[in-house]
Image (cartoon, rainbow over all chains, first blue to last red; front, side, top):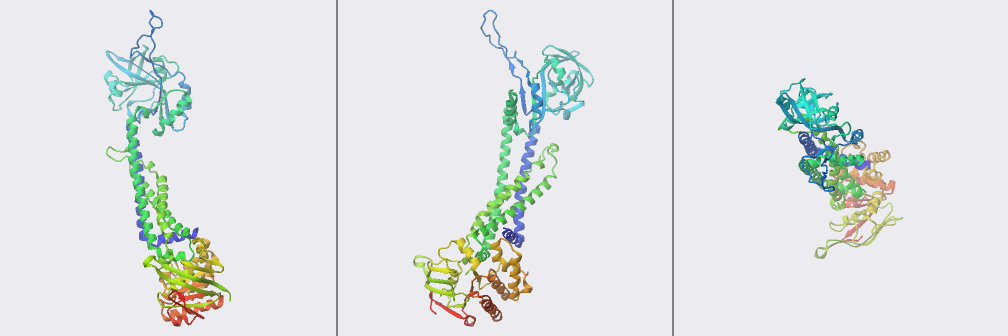
Length: 401
Length: 225
């Protein structure tokens, strides 16, 4: 129906001022939609990077084992278990699953770990520490240690240890100096401090240390198997689905960050809801604007509709003309708004560089395609009633015969 | 002569109850192919209502209306729209052109709306009609920039675009000066003679009616002469 398109275009271009205002209104609505998408997306990214960004999104952890104790004097009698005397089992088969997990869609990084605790001693100074054995080359896979590095290197070679700045200062350790480590399993080792970091978190900076995975295996007497596997995802909101997939694939118990941080999930969901409401309002505004403009246009063009009907134009043709006008306004307005949105949002710094107090806007999360699609659909829907009204115009009354 | 259309016992009422107004009161009329007839009568006699019904823009309250053998009272709105497009042309008192379109675009509208596009054939036919109306130099003029007489000649060309069997003209010269009115009537007469198109022209003007070979007088909703 090229002819209908021609008439729709002619009507729109004949009222340039009205059409320009209408397009401006739609563009502003789309701009708001895109701005809110980028802001909410950026805000979510900002919050998650500041909270769960350095945490694993999925963890596969060996269960604590409370060994049953049998009374040698009374065979078959189970004694009470004493909390604190448990030990962590190992994921004996997990190593084999790491390559499979790595290639799952949505998985950004995988960190196989052997963990435990121990004591650091240097001279008369002693400190209790948690020890995480990381695979060399994957030191920053989960916690971005590189970004917190104060001195030295994050690269973990055999016999090296990476410590928090506070812990190192407490022991009077400097880069390149040696320290005695005794694991909870009683294995001693002499390690060299190769790097210090400052995460800004007292507990981590004081008591967390990192060694290479082979070193950790020796310390905790785990020549095979793992204590846990930590997994980071491209999109944290896919964690539950990927967790289920990993469990099905490996048979291991995996836990999503949503189980560990339900409050954060609630906060992000509430924020997303607010964004959704605001975007819905923007769309409703567009629909009302287009509908009122189409109503006005169909009323103003009543005599012409009457003439067209008298000349043999069917009701469907009249509906088509007004729906096309709505669609054209929707598409052009949405594209203009999307272009404007991209141009303006591009002026904001990236979320990672956002300064405190500034808007963490992610230009990539503007939902441009969605905005154009929804606006076009909305504009067409908004035109239906005016179009039907126009088609029902009585030609005799409209012409004034 | 062959009958083009016939209406029998045509009644048209507007409103209901005490407000009911009966405009046509059992009107009978037959038009032959190739006739050029004037429809005369005082204001309120029912001339415009009759033209509107004959043009299938309105249905009668009762009575029969057939044209080219088609029962137009029983037809659906869609069927009437198609029938109107193919077989009936209109010339209104106030030309009623589409203001945002050129003279040519107005003329070819009835064909373009049926075919879904402006075909070269339709454009050629439109140009030919406009040339015939003495508007060869106004083909691409915006219709709103034409004079009253020019607009009415464009309206006549538009009415003839689909080569309809019947052209209904409601006071086609009522809004024109004498010279333009005569020019329009001469054109109508020429087309009637050359193409055999049937014209039914509503007018108050006896001189305009004199151009027509038949005068039909309507009074109080019935044909009286």
